[in-house]
Length: 112
Image (cartoon, rainbow, N blue to C red; front, top):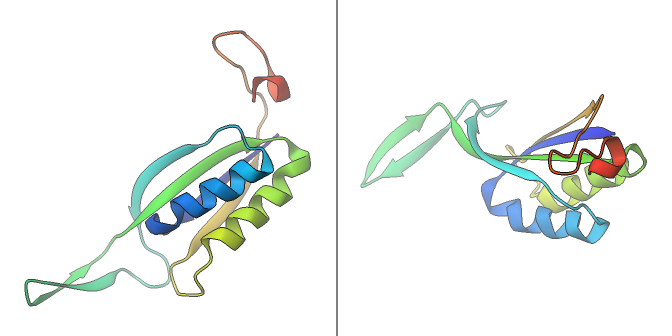
């Protein structure tokens, strides 16, 4: 099993969700986060005054999937979240040692 973590622009969430649903991904966790990468924050204009923000709002998506479809999940996220602009985000893939469905006690792939 793999844990795929993607940090994307907020307005791309619906496109990413649709792409993952098409692959058969049964669930995901979505969190509103803030951070910065190479762009080092951004400058915003509010009521005529310019403000510099250190943290940029992003969406973090976490998906646990079978190892066999992890590459397709990453590709789907990459294609649907891409705008071609700085700050499109990052994708991380980690190994998952064990998963347990609390209600039934199912483990690993059957728990997904």
